[in-house]
Length: 254
Image 1 (cartoon, rainbow, N blue to C red):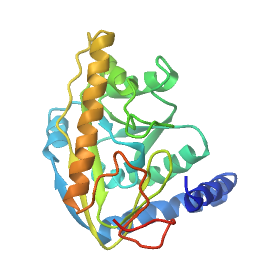
Image 2 (tube, rainbow, N blue to C red; image 1 turned 90 degrees about the vertical axis):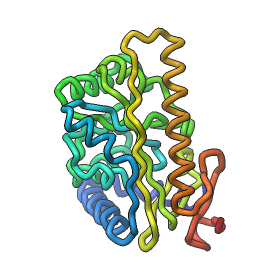
Image 3 (cartoon, helix red, strand yellow; image 1 turned 120 degrees about the vertical axis):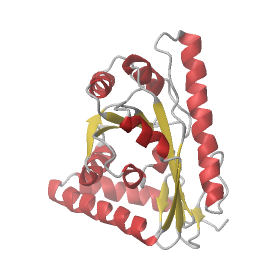
């Protein structure tokens, strides 16, 4: 993790200790996300996939990588009630409070703990007809490596997994464990929705592993495609620095 990213995280933790400051910070984050959305030229691919599922009144699991979380609320656009699985540590609480401005409810926990209260909450929400959002590589990675948790939620709830990714031509990419992408204003952006991945509820252990690899492979292919759409090389297998903003975060242009 580079010095700027570490300092940024430390400042977030300090702010998180004060409820008032955390509310101000979260409101500012939500305003910044809207600013980035309205000042970039966006292309959307595959939006018919989630719309078709909602037209059929089918709930589904929205899957996106932890490092590509920032603009996901703008891809969602309040398509349906959604519950996002977010870790319970301080950084997670900041994310939860920020996305609440977009109508996203949060559930604290991690799918890496099978049978946990968080997993049961996800299954319950899907059974009620709502959607859920999960970062398959959260809360602590490895980056862009899916856990079996997302497959188990889909299997238990009998709900498909719909991957989504964003990329922007101007961005900061920090040397954090998740290779966090911070989109910048005044560029180009793309949202790519993937084809729904149906999970057999009767999968055995080997079948769960095959499904996990399928989700991971599909999502990483989408990352590479999204990056190419905005003229950027993929950061799937590299610790990146800065794209489109020279001199920041101790990074370099690519």
